[in-house]
Length: 78
Image 1: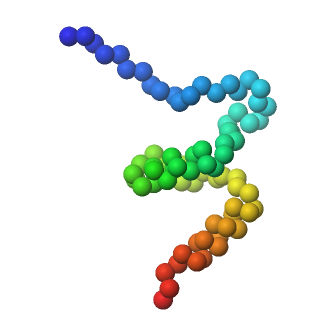
Image 2: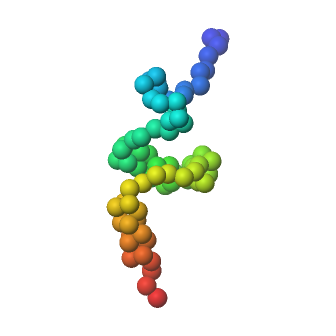
């Protein structure tokens, strides 16, 4: 019986050589690129989301205001 060799997948390779030293722990991506994946992870109740629930994210003021308005108007009426 052939033995299988498993490897850990770390995601796509990203060239960090041209980024400043202070930003090695950050990546800028379009919201449209990650939003479908995050929505799927929430729907699927992926436990790894809990690992990041206290992480801060930076969003534009416009998006923040839209999210606040959405939060206010989606509340169930009494």
